[in-house]
Image 1: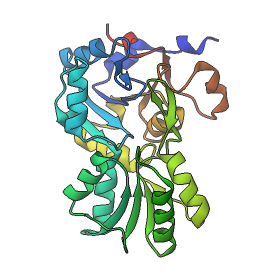
Image 2: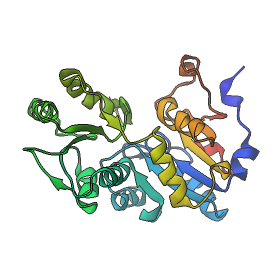
Image 3: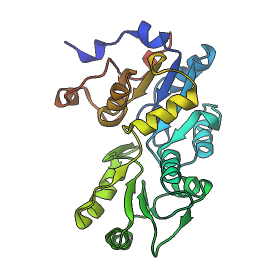
Length: 265
């Protein structure tokens, strides 16, 4: 059976709300994917509630809104929720007013500041790791020392890779691996597929899981998150997952599409 044909577009279109991944679904790097603009226009035209839920912690919702704007899609910042925001919320609930040593980009640092956290490279409560382009041996060494001294290890998401314009790029999970191996401590990951992230999304949308579909390109985050949250799952093959990868997983998406361009009617 051709897995790409296993899709009931009527069921997908009937959903009142959509949780949508970004990298590999809407764009690759700075390149808009086929039908992305038409898909967002369809969501707006049909008064669908939608939230871009991304495991990327690099950018703030305002920056993500601006990025889509540059690509020709106008979406307010309120339609975005990131693993950086989820991580900051989680840490604030765990230890209000704490401190962190952060390996990450401005989106993560800003989210932590907004929740009352301070940066600390001496005796932090947490070592927090997200996507980082300034990842060096020195930062790894520093993080290892702080974790061994008692700081708890947190990852914004477990993704080992992510899609880039030139192919796959290392994800947060890959950047965390040396720290986990050297310390013998396992990180706690806040982003998808953690149910925490999904509960945040559902609350922000103001809907029930039964009326919601999740659209993503990763089996190990998007699709398993949707399955465990009892949502309609839509896998698109425009990102990191290929059709040949599906038999490797013990679970399956409800629908498989080539891309979001298939959804609008």
